[in-house]
Length: 199
Image 1: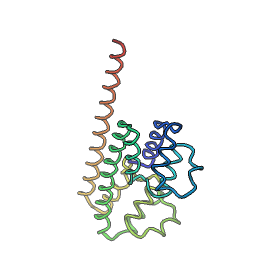
Image 2: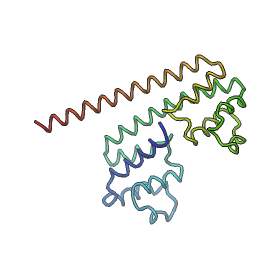
Image 3: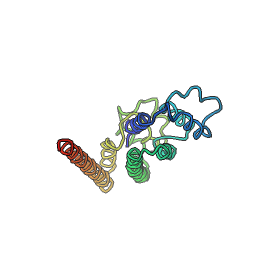
């Protein structure tokens, strides 16, 4: 899952929790993660979540605090969304780790960097010492994410790794099928609500 989807998840959570009535409880519970005296700078749920991020207690690959918050507020639909996000993100990270190992074994980082020409600034290329740092930089530049895997397929093709290319394509197909099934399910759900309202 992408950084944009992660930020959207944080925003959704912040919108569904009433800060006015829950402020004292939230600040009391999460005070253990916050630096002394920062409570006055936290004006709403979103600023609390941002502060937790700044303290490295929350992040795209670390949703435990967020899920705990959602559970305490009994927002079960949001909890389901957070868990689904986390599972998809884990699948994506597993794919990246596998690609990183396979491509890293080739020992052709310079060749991989040439594949990424125009996708990473020249000043950042000097800091890339392995395939995983290359992936991180591509993600920062929004050229690699769960819905943007073209660069991985290009790398696999250029380094003549047909099995890896097939695995990335299969991952893409599986993700697209899951998204289509979710869309269809939501569509059926909204049609059911409309017919119920009509009755």
